[in-house]
Image (cartoon, rainbow, N blue to C red):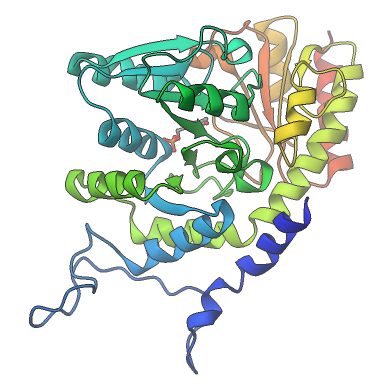
Amino acid sequence: MSETANSRAAALSHLRSHGFTSGDPIPLPLTMASIFHTPGVETGVDQYGRYDNPTWRAVEHVLGHLEDAQCVSFPSGMAAISAVFFALLKSGDRVLLPADGYHATRAMAERFLKPLGITCDSRPTPTFLDGGFEAYRLVFIETPSNPRLDICDISAVAKAAHEQGAILAVDNTTMTPFGQRPLDFGADIVVSADTKAVNGHSDVLFGHVASRNADIIAGVTDWRAMVGGIPGPFEAWLVHRGLETLEVRFDRMCSSAEIIARRLKEHHAVRGLRFPGLDGDLSHNLARAQMDRFGFLISFELSSEEKAEDFINNCQLIEAATSFGGVHTSAERRSKRGDAVPAGFVRLSVGCEPVEELWRAIAESLDRTGG
Ligand SMILES: *Cc1c(COP(=O)(O)O)cnc(C)c1O
């Protein structure tokens, strides 16, 4: 990691201490409250739990520290993404989405934006720049895209979008702020499903919107307060706890993924392996330019649905589960969820297990499954 990423990581655990007075708890207290003591007409204090909560502020402070931006937290990744769409778009606007990104983003746009008179188009991530961005109000990308791990050039998309008067939002779920910081490359908005690696323990759904533009932050904050799609304080508290170990977990996961991707690629049963960190991967050069780490997701194909199921279900150190980014290594055959990929396509999310033990379990299961 770069020196600045390391200094952000080092400062993270001590952010709260600047406000300490004697006897304060070092870890974050959990504030479960819908109402607060508000005699008289004083403003600028907590009054009602739909507007703000001290535990949200703590998690937003940490996320904002990592993003160098203001952050607004949400009860899921989709709540964060829909806040961006519904707070910033109006009838007659055009939005451009990745054709190969997280499926619910496209489905939500089709189902709920289109009837409001918002035009939704999509394009594949590897050729996202082709065709330009004329007439778009919002351009939305996901890089690396989930599940195929294709990449597009954040700086180039930001520049071209801005020239046409569009704003750029980036879904940074697969990378976390320790792996990639799209705002540094000119993006206007980052959205993230903190359900995944940021929380990291697969026990919470959560999301955030980050931006360095005060109007955008005001818009999504207002949306959250009015619509009432707010995170629970306990969930915020758990995500805050997850953030305290994110750098350690992410470092282990990315380092292990680099080793495992290289070995998997050599295995006779594996085809079409994608990992942005591998020399020769279609994404590699761009990945080196804009990513701080190469992530913990690996995708590849086995020869059939049965082989892929056998491999996943019979590996001692892989959980058969959707989602990714947890401490437990997990995998899923993505055609099961409707992604446009072959039946034997596997997305592997490398977890925090010691790498040699993990590799041994993966190799054993692959060998048993056969090519
Ligand atoms: C999981 C995911 C989301 C949605 O997050 P939820 O917390 O499940 O709502 C959005 N984008 C990407 C890339 C994801 O992987």
